[in-house]
Image (cartoon, rainbow, N blue to C red; front, side, top):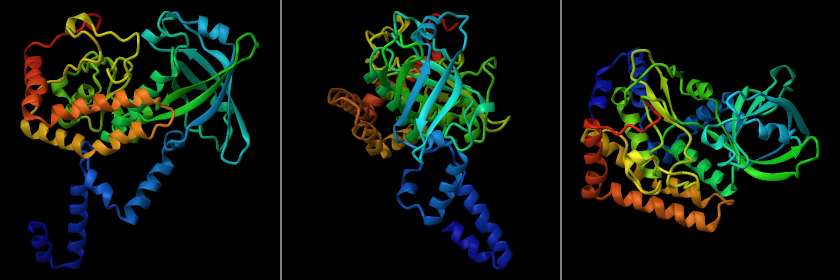
Length: 384
């Protein structure tokens, strides 16, 4: 009513247009908050604007279709090169474009990762794809890509699908998240000494690209930032999200599985999570919680955030409740997911929603734990 009254009082036509513009800017500027109600009634103009924005974005991550790829290299050399001083190995990547033509790109590949680089953990480790820009053909979906992480099947395709879906969950909660693209990769050995296999994998958006998409810059890893010095709403959403998926394998000050982006040099940085293979909802066989946390399994949830004001908790609960249907749909609409994994995942989400919607349970498992964390935060050995 106040806005309408002010508009009526603004009788000059030019002033009215200025006022309307200011109102639109104020109402639209809240990038860290979920706005589920807006999606139900988007105007045609808003949809066109969104389509125009997505055209400028990396086309590799604006499509949810499974990308069929063929990656050819000397796998005997690649898979043996897992030490700290790894090298890139020549490779080619082939796929069929939208016209039906086969595109073959030159690139270099290297084993990546920390724990998953260990051959005792992963039979087939994650890979870094490094494209050769000079030979990149025009019109390819990789035109805006320099380096991209490929998360491979490790020991079982089911786990790579589970982790891929966690990224998709956080995409629902906020745009300040890493985008991913599900692939089905045919791994062809150039020497013919290794049997060809086809497995699910997914690509992860580059961190600088993620920051640029959010009109922000990466905060250098050497800059130590405490959890309570990050943007409050973004931090609250992230902390509750990590609790939802049962992930304790992260740290803001030690920048462990967390990137920080800043939209302004004077603004508090925004935390962005990645690497979810140690989460309870993924439950990778090699994932065990650090002994300092005192939990028997990664499936056991433990809140690792600080406490927040009641109004922030209320906003976060409302956000997760408003997105409950699309969150569940992420799993229900993933055709490659096994029925047993689907059932387990939905059950795991059920227990989270019971917690956040029962005030006493929410207070005991999140609010009080957050208050305790502020006073005596348990630091995991190895992150110091």
